Amino acid sequence: MNNPSILIIGSNGQLGSDMVMLSKQAGFNVSEIDFPQIDITDPSMTERCIIDFKPDYIINCAAYTAVDDCETHQKTAFAVNAQGAQNIAISAKKAGAVMVHISTDYVFDGKKDSPYLEQDQTAPLTVYGKSKLEGERLIAAHCEKYQIFRIAWLYGIYGNNFVKTIRNVAQKKMQQKQPLKVVNDQFGTPTYTREVCAQVLKMITQPYYGIFHCTNEGYCSWYDFALEIIKAAGIDVELVPCTTDEFPRPAPRPHYSVLENANLKKLNMNVMKDWKTAFKNFLIDESKHISIEHQ
Ligand SMILES: NC(=O)c1ccc[n+]([C@@H]2O[C@H](COP(=O)([O-])OP(=O)(O)OC[C@H]3O[C@@H](n4cnc5c(N)ncnc54)[C@H](OP(=O)(O)O)[C@@H]3O)[C@@H](O)[C@H]2O)c1
Image (tube, rainbow, N blue to C red; front, side, top):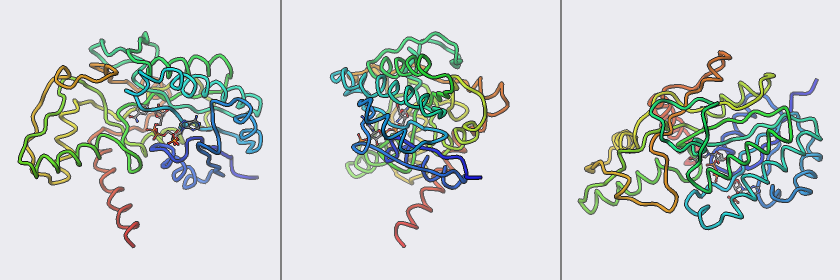
């Protein structure tokens, strides 16, 4: 019998790149595709790609992820994050495939003071959050066999993320002998791409459907995370905690978006590690990746 097949959409992105690698390592028969070979906003193109590949599972890592830009590009945000998700769900159902989709902590307003459960009231503050929430709703309306993983504060080896930004800015501040201010009143959980991949791949063949919170364990502020990043990078810069008000952004960020992986835990399936352990593992993986690149 052939190994089960997975089609990974958005395969060149931060999460998609690791998803391709780890799905192959896990023994799946993997096909990968990204924009412009597929444009998920185009229903017939999406259906053609999915029918051509005939996958057992589809993992959608594609999204319009520029949170601030979404505020001024509302149409694109909804076209990709909502209608795009719907197009995949409709085609997944036609093809008899399970749809795995990635969503976000930004579906919540961040006003709670204890970790969010899957069934908690959603109330996105931003266009990005609203478009992702609409994507969740449309998937549930168009296919039965879906797994939606809400992740948060994502970082990994590929693409741009907070870890890389902090290292770059900290280097510059060190050279300029200036302190670096980092927001200390927003709380969430840094989540390593490969941890998400491992969790998704553990769940994908299981007959469990619905929404699953999927972040590393524990939580911190951006300032706490930045401290870990510059300590690990050995950058000698003074880090100064500041408030969100000092760094206004076009899209307001939730004050508290800690997610509890409650549904995964109920099923005894949660494999997400504590965020500091995951960050250490990222540093190890990153150094291996750099040494392979330099061979
Ligand atoms: N990054 C975070 O902190 C974070 C937090 C919570 C949840 N998430 C969710 O996690 C998932 C993965 O995020 P990520 O950081 O890996 O995103 P990413 O690096 O921005 O990758 C997204 C991929 O989607 C592709 N794409 C965009 N529009 C498309 C379209 N119309 N058709 C087909 N592909 C398209 C992009 O291609 P181009 O580069 O060519 O545009 C890119 O390769 C997303 O669902 C995101 O909403 C991310």
